[in-house]
Length: 420
Ligand SMILES: [Fe+2]
Image 1 (tube, rainbow, N blue to C red):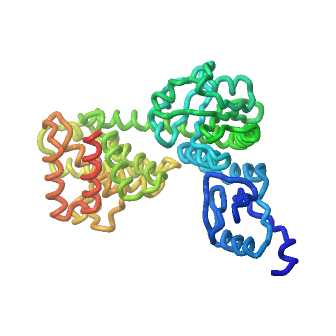
Image 2 (spheres, rainbow, N blue to C red):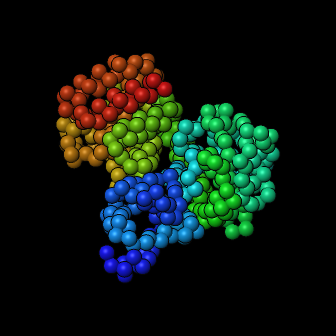
Image 3 (spheres, protein in one colour):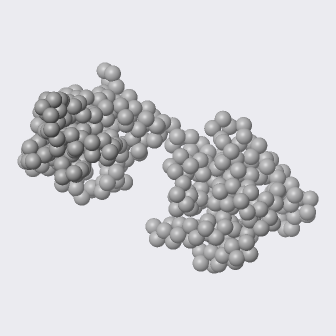
C-alpha cells in the first residue's frame, strides 16, 4: 500500500451516508445497512453493489472515503423522488426516504384543509385507517403548521398536546416526533411528521426534515391536485356509464362492477398501476357505444331479429369510435370496448377475432362483463349465485371461448371480493 493512496480522499456519492470499519464510524448511520466485504455501509435509496465493492477494497487498502454532507444527500433524495403524478407512489417514497435519512420508524403527511389537517393515504399499518380522521389544529401537527417551523417533541408520553386519536385507530405507539410545515414558496400546504427514533430526535433532524419539506412541496402539491382531478374525472365517467346502464335496464352498478372485477383480474395478471388505470377506464366505458343503438332495438322485449341483433353488435364499434375522439384514450382502452364480445374460438363479435388476435383488455373485460351480467338481477332473470355463474363460464373456457389464465384470475378475484 503506497502512502499516496492513504492520503487520497475519495468523495463518495450522495447516497452514501457513512460506513463502519473496524468499529469506527465515518459519516453517519441510516436505516439501510448493506454489508460488503465485512464493512457496514449506510446508504440511501438506490446504490450500486459494484461501487460499494470498489469502496470496500479501497477502505481495506487505507483510502479514506468522504461521505457526502447531509444537506447534499437531502437535496439529492428530494430531486430523485418519483416525479410522475401518482400520489400513492410519491407518498410511499417520501416516507421511506425521510425515515432512512434520519433513521426513524415511520412518517406521515397531512394536508391543510381550512380549519384542520388531514392525513393523506399512507403506507404501512395505518393505511386506510387514518385518512378519515380530521386532526385538530390544537395537536402537535397543528402546532407545527401554525408556528411555521420545524419542531421536535421527545416527550410524547407526557405531552398533553399529543392527539392520541390517530395512534388508537392505527394501533401505533408514537414515542417521539420531529415535524415541519410543507412549503410551496411562501405558502404552507401541510405538515410532514417523522416518528420514533431511538434516543429521540435532535435539532439537526429538525433542520433535515425542514429542508426536505421545502424541497418536496411542489411535487407533493401537483400529485395531490392531480389525484383530486382524476377522482372527479372518474366520477363523471361513472355517471355517464350509469346513464347507459339504466337505459339498457341494467342494474346501475353494472359498469362499476365490470370495472372492479376487471381491475382485480388485471392486478393478478401483473399489470402496472398505469395499465390498471387504463383498464378501469376502458371497463367503465365498455358499453358506451350503446348510446348509438335505438331504443326500439335496445329495449325490445322478446327475441331480436337477425337484423336487429346485427345492429346491437355494432355497440362495440360505436364505442371504439366514441372513445377514439378522447385525447387520453389509447389503443388498449379502445380495444376493451371494441373486443369485449370477441371470443377466443372466433364465435364472438364484431369481427370474430380468434385467440391472440384479441387484446388482453378485450379478454379481461369480456369475462368480467359476462360474470356480472349472469350474477346480477335483471328484469328478465333473478341473480344467480357466484358458484353457478362460475360453472357456466368454466364450461365456456372448456369450449375454448375464454382464456384459461384469465378465468383462473377471475376465480381468485371473485373469492377475494366475496370474502370482503
Ligand atoms: Fe357490451
